[in-house]
Length: 77
Image (cartoon, rainbow, N blue to C red; front, side):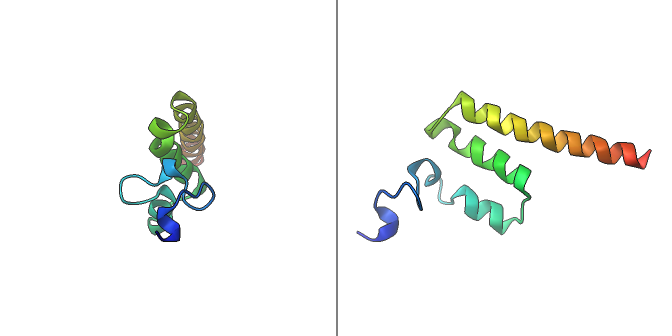
């Protein structure tokens, strides 16, 4: 068994090793910013780790993104 297939909670936590791509790899390959990356991360892991708590964390980051858009819209007015 190689290192990636063994249980490794630091480098390959089980709640991120589903669906063929880890959220970090998806985030990096799409050059997503911190806030958007966290939304992806928490939504992805919610069913396999903390459920509702992770969805609430994702909502926190979504709200920050919405605040940033609102500020940009104000600057354009």
